[in-house]
Length: 93
Image 1: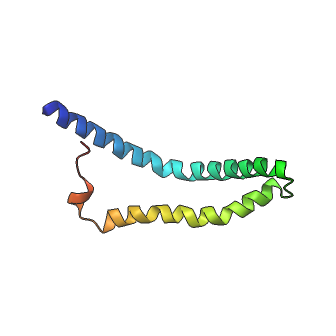
Image 2 (image 1 turned 30 degrees about the vertical axis):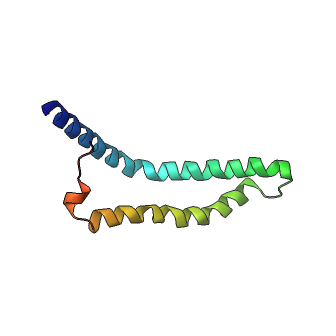
Image 3 (image 1 turned 180 degrees about the vertical axis):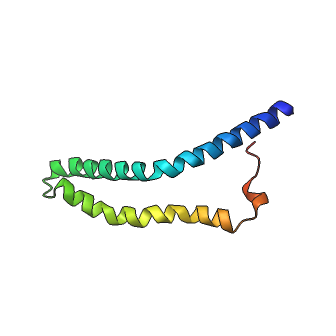
């Protein structure tokens, strides 16, 4: 029992560290994803005689990403501010 509790506490401390790193990694990962996605669209459009440029693809994909990114934070806001703390911090195992 003590080992299991110790493992759970260790896992929770690792999750807290991950959330700290996630604060600093979200923006660079989003930008890299945006650039890679525009490159994939460009590579897929070339065999079909696509006339757009890479910059056109970046511009065309900016608006959907701008709409999508904030919508991913809505569930976190609901969990953080609406639900009671007893429900949020449930044991992992």
